[in-house]
Image (cartoon, rainbow, N blue to C red; front, side, top):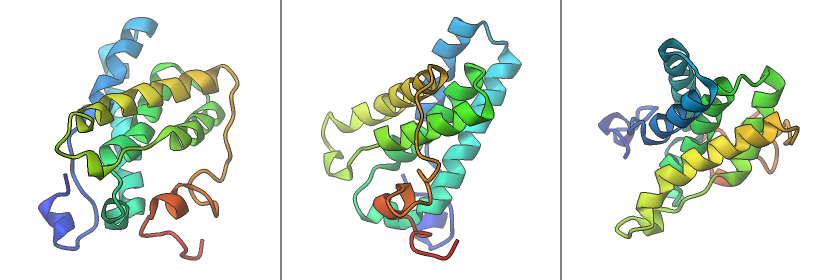
Length: 162
């Protein structure tokens, strides 16, 4: 949900931590991570989620995307990457893979499908990190490329000089 600040035209938005909060617990059980490591991963996911939200802005929402499912996939991939101990390069690939797996349409608000968005984002984020750890790669242009996430998902920064 867009915050009052966002609706007032101010940058940023605030939504629940639904995708990030679903991601670290299974990974922590799998890796034996400490509470501090779990918190570190959660905060990293929050940062990625927030920065992607700022980049995509309200235009993303206006076009019909549900950010919990799109941006949330990136945050979940960051959480899973940290929890699984991925290298910086692997984490970059995890984000690229996550961007390709991201989706979720606002047209499904008011239907049971909307409830699937947060869980799907968490699942896709973990899957992206696992694939990257196994050697799968994605484009380095996943965010800023001509057919990257900003251009395709309608970010407010899309088309601006880089």
